[in-house]
Structure formats: C-alpha cells, structure tokens
Image (tube, rainbow, N blue to C red; front, side, top):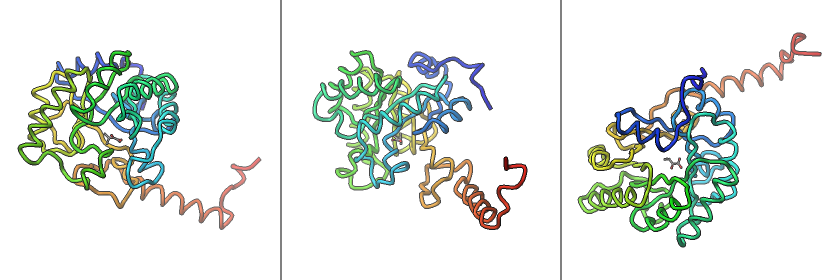
Length: 271
Ligand code: KIV
C-alpha cells in the first residue's frame, strides 16, 4: 500500500500540529532502504534510525558499540527510501556526551552526510546545553528519557524506570528542561503509564512512548520486535503484528527443499 500521494512531508511543524489537534504520532525504527521504503509508503510519521541497530542489526548486547560512521551509513539508506516520513537519527554513545561542541559536530555530520531531518539524544538536565547548541545550528533534536539504553552500565538493568517519587520528579523536571532547551519531541521509554500521562499533559511538545502506556502523543517500537523477527525477545510492551520469524523460516526451509531436490529452478524460471 502506498499512502504517500495523500500526505504531506512530516516536519517538526506537522508534529506540533498533531499534538495540538490530538492526532497520534506513529514512529518505527528502520535501519535499511528496503524496510524504510515499506514503512514510508505505509504512512509512518517518523522513521527512527535507532542505535538499537547495534542490537538488531549487528548482534551486540548493548547499544554502546555502534559508531557515528555506522549510524550515518544506516541513516543514508533510510533517507534514500523516505519520501514523506521524517527521519530522526540517534546520536550514538560517545558522540555527544563529552561537550557541546562534540554534540554539534556529530549532529552536523549526521545531517550533512545522510540527509536526515533530526537527531535524538538520551538524557536530561546534563545534556540541555548540548541540545541548545545543536538546535541553534538549525538541527531539530528529539529527547529521550526514562530507560536510556546508552546508560545501561549505570542503570544496571533494562527494568521500568522512575518508579519512586524522586525519579518521578526528576523525570518531569528533565522533560520540562529539554522542552525549554528546544527539543521538538521527547521519547519516554519504559516508565509507568501514569507518569507518561502526567509528562504529556505538562508539555507543549509531543511525547512518544515505548513501554510508557497509551496516553503519550505517539508510540514507537523497534521494527524487529513488532514484526516478530526475534522469538526470544518478548517484553510486555511489545505487540507482535506478524510472526515474520516463522514465515521466513518456513520460506527458507521450502527453498532449501526445492533446491536440494532440483525443484527450483524449473523451466519457466530458466533461460
Ligand atoms: O534506538 C532505538 O531503537 C530507540 C527506541 C527504542 C526509541 O531509541
């Protein structure tokens, strides 16, 4: 299905309008041209080139190893496929935490070399100076609070975040600071639905939830999770819309059978 003839290019302005009118924002990760093209034509608002590529594309157990160059490579492929969706790219671990200049340099490289529309950065108060500086250069920034996988060594686990009063209050404060610093949207990952609702109500910019309940201004999932590509990853917040793992293994088994029994190719598939 191609919905693109009827929709306009998604920009930060369009997202702001959606928040104002209560229209819910859809976001999915994408890391390559072929899937990004399918998602764009299906009408997804935002394609997130997540640093989760480190997990689902490269097989690392955390997002920490992926490099700026690798993010630019994935982003370039997604941008080529994207006609109407906005393309947001994660600044990878180590590319923006040292100082504001690093953040600006990394964000510029991503936008200049891939053609992406915006970057995403994890963290609260500690990154607001960098957010301000990146936004000043003309690059829109999406924030990311709650479970921030780049801090896994400090967090110690991928459990639900902000479950006590102090962390609850800090998250609200951080969300307001990110908004003030110029973020155009904030991802809220794995926090109680009640807190996500509260944050969403306090902000004039959209919140995009993942494991954060149904009261955010939008939702995001990792494509491999919602397409059922990994049978060993079944967290509560993921809804599998298709069991691609099963369908693909069946197709590949059939192909192996046909090849080994000389059923493929037949005459109609030969020159
Ligand atoms: O890297 C990623 O895929 C993300 C989403 C989980 C929001 O940051």
